Length: 112
Length: 115
Image 1 (tube, rainbow over the protein chains, first blue to last red):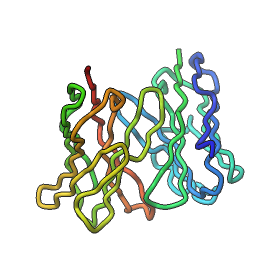
Image 2 (cartoon, chains in turn orange, brown):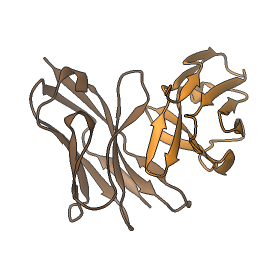
Image 3 (cartoon, rainbow over the protein chains, first blue to last red):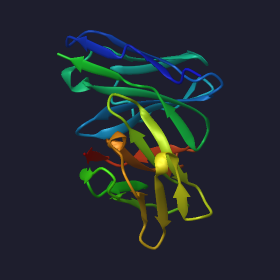
Image 4 (cartoon, rainbow over the protein chains, first blue to last red):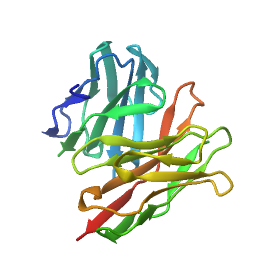
């Protein structure tokens, strides 16, 4: 089992550019979560999908952020346009049971 | 609303010494509690969880935690730490107000094990 796969692992971009983060959940998992980790705010849930459907997007900071899950094996988190305050580590996690989430290695985003 | 407070941002300890990482929670309903570990440049990994039953929960890598309802605490302990335990540890509580298990994480405790 390869675990949750995220790409890229590191992304450096300039303010105003579009950024797309990708996630492949563990096969068979029907829940997917996107988190953001910063020193100031800690770990925050951005959005939760169940069976490919967005259930809770109340954590998405603003309209510049969007997430999709076109099928059970792929999800994207897009920021357009990006701003320096979006610099953070973004984690994707998946689960097949309510009480355990499996996290990917994260994408470290730096917006200059 | 559910919340978690991790009382120590950093805990330095010598190798083979015991360690306790403190976590207090606030919850108005049934409590489900978790400890996750984040090794450098990696994602979070579940160490242990309390769902019900015995208040002493054993996890991976020799860690254990005790659920104390009267003190609203869920402290993490290990009797003898190794250099490899150096990592950030997060306590979390479940919030089901949205109809699913939303984890509310504490700010984290950085455990630094010194030789």
